[in-house]
Amino acid sequence: MGQSASQAAAFYKEVGKNKKLWTCKDEGGVPAPLKSDGRRAMPFWSSLSRVQKIIKTVPAYKVFEPLELSWESFVKDWAPGLKKDGLLVGLNWSGANATGYDIEPDDVVSNTNHYANTAT
Image (cartoon, rainbow, N blue to C red; front, side, top):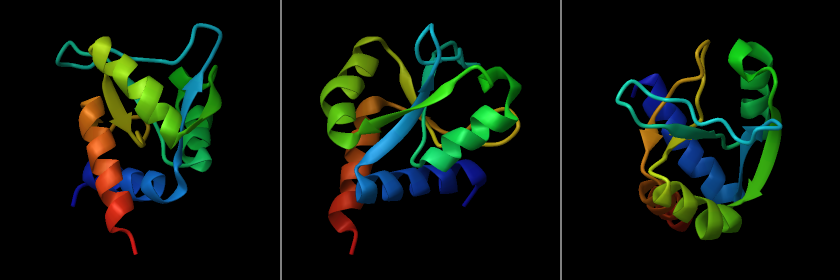
């Protein structure tokens, strides 16, 4: 399993278990960088320490602060809004450039709920 795949699996498992996730924000809101395919993705992480690491180590994210969300809020408000706006969800972006899998909002909800329902 590649780095992005393992980060995505960790996202589903951790968010499914803990029922919370994080993004980051500044005065202008939450980042949604343009990807190489012309679409934008908004990053989300499955733990506070993951988002803090990106803010600390990736220069483009130094101006942001963590924003905690409940899974319920993400499912009811954020995912429909992201879908409406044509945005993808960036899962546990990591590394020097804060990259990883970018998934459709409905797939994030489905995959995370699957992990939550199969966790033992």
